[in-house]
View 1 (cartoon, rainbow, N blue to C red):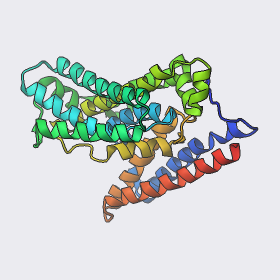
View 2: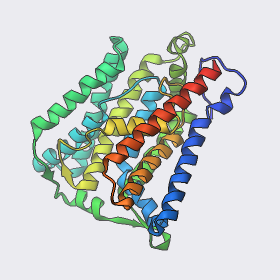
View 3: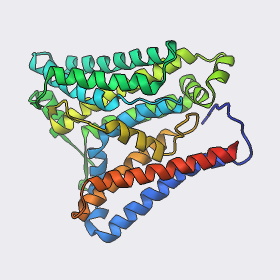
View 4: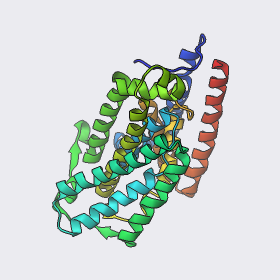
Length: 328
């Protein structure tokens, strides 16, 4: 696994950067162990698979966010792009377009939106926070313009994909969306860790100036990661339509924060240059287990999920700060 960073490297840094992902894994094991001990049904294999089924769209969105954060950027538009994608699916299907054409059109729209934001960020040298904030309002506004009400999807292909379980040994099952999410994660992991694009992503996050001096394709890569994030957000929107069989402008409110939290809790440093896609998967699973624990408890409000995630996010950011500080 080749990682290029331009930050000063001292003894122990290579090992220290694994600490956040190790902490995420330990947290996941502790949370799952606590749940399985307190609630016997929590240990059922299908409960674990249900976490994947309920969060397949978040896994895909968080994978795209990982690319962006590894370059030291941020993408606040992902939740709005997910909502826009669900509405586009509903409206284009209602207009009579075939489902495969609708999916391709929605994916292209998400990628083009990401391409536009990435181009503005790089060529106009505007902070990603500002550009993607504008993209967030733009995408959400367009989706409300298209429809202010929830639109049910009755297309046969969408319904078939949504309602067809994938049987596993032991009577367990997952949804088609989970298989798509796993495929996306495998491709993203390969690109990040075994291709020139992935090495350039890490190099830009380590030091943008050093990456330029090394002759790496900084412009193409910076624009590319936002295009990837837009594509993943659109795909996440399609997976959300499989999950809900509806298009709604109010979908995915706050999902950008969930995706960022999953990436950070998974060990990717917010300033870029260090992190792993496997950590992002752990981060999503941690969020899913916490949500499931609160559901099993039954007496706690769903807002406790946000409280716990906020506390975890703060802890992991402090942990990252300590690690980076010691490395320097």
